[in-house]
Amino acid sequence: MSVRQIRVVGDPVLRAKAHPVRRFGDHLEALVEDMVETMHAAAGIGLAAPQVGVLERVIVIELSQEEQDPGSGQLYVLVNPQIARASTEEEAGIEGCLSVPGYVGEVVRHQAVTVKGQDVQGRKIRIKAQGLLARVFQHEIDHLDGVLYIDKLTAPDSVWQVVEGEEELAEARGKVESQAVASPSDGLALA
Ligand code: ZN
Image (tube, rainbow, N blue to C red):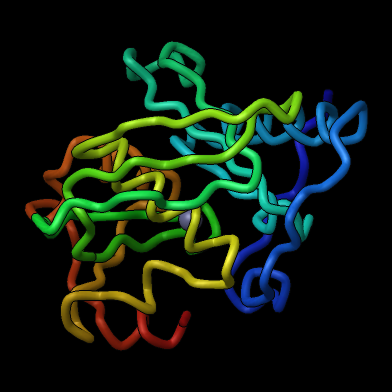
């Protein structure tokens, strides 16, 4: 296992469409292991393969239960994920992204989604998610189509600068606004 380099906004790989995975086996398992290790090392709560430069439709998500231990939540690994159902109810929330360091922004997402896909062995799986987990699924699946949260801000100035490394924490706590410094022009320049 190894920690891979996280690509940041400006890298064209983040804007490309990832390919469906057709071959399951050692290569895929190694990729997933590295993605989980990379997500933990960055204290992230989700990671999509294009963020480590691999254009394959693979995502990993883990909402840590303990602040100091990124490996303390339930791990979801999804290959070829698709949103099968989405609630009509939507909600605005604050998101950060490991590929957009130093910023968070407000995005509207479906409150609940059912995601279907395959596990690392190729078996079909279906996951019902709501709230933060549903939001992270939508954020990660967007990455597979070259879409970043900064494309979907509720308003052009709904993006804030934060202390680098605190983005995902801020997202999970959902109280970033009080500590954020408004810097919309810088945020949009990054897009
Ligand atoms: Zn992201």
